[in-house]
Length: 265
Image (cartoon, rainbow, N blue to C red; front, side, top):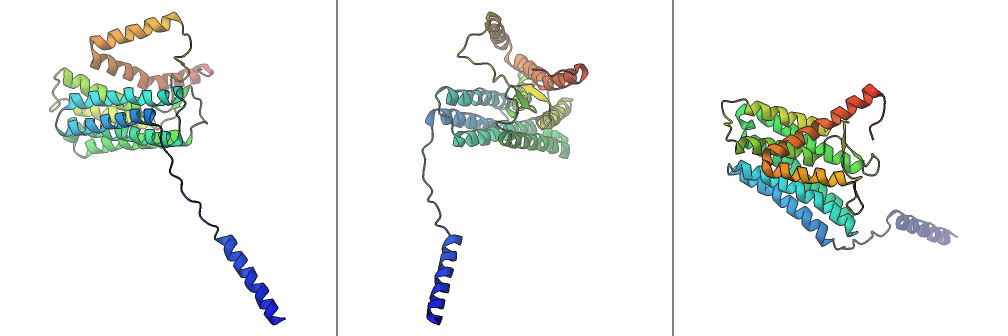
């Protein structure tokens, strides 16, 4: 009986150990979609290229590279949706690329261009912007599928980076001196404003409701042509002006909703 009891207890112990330590699933390697991730890689390269040029005092090229990242970043998601090649890997890769192109790159370019003349206030402003971009992207990732797709919660990082790059491009293109002027403090204000607005609850129109596969009113095409004409006539001034308007539009929507008591949609 004792032998039988010991054998039964032994079987019980073995059974418990087996249940507590199940075999680990083997990781399976999966391929990635080439086309959308190629656009993401190109956007990442443009952001890195902006940093390199800022280190070499080529600030106008650095600013243009950030705008190139903006165009490429806008294409990767649309290409993925149009070709049905969306993936979790692509979403995470795009977010990391955005952090470099629209978080780190604008902060470092602005610091090398003007903010470093302000000493600790300069790098604090650059860090405020960079941290705001990181928090904005993290919040966007966890809120995907929860918030209204017609609007962004907070200023999107590509728009914030373009606001910074647009001001740098405009000032450099017009040969406005940086030292012994108000330029460093204006850059300080833009960096802090953009950084805080990225983590605000202000709603900014996303444009995701527009579908290029369907018909649009004729006036939309006319407006698009006029926009191209304005950008071609004076790219830095027009782009900076457009992103200034966009960067305050969220607060305009907030004020309108609170004053009228109606939801803007």
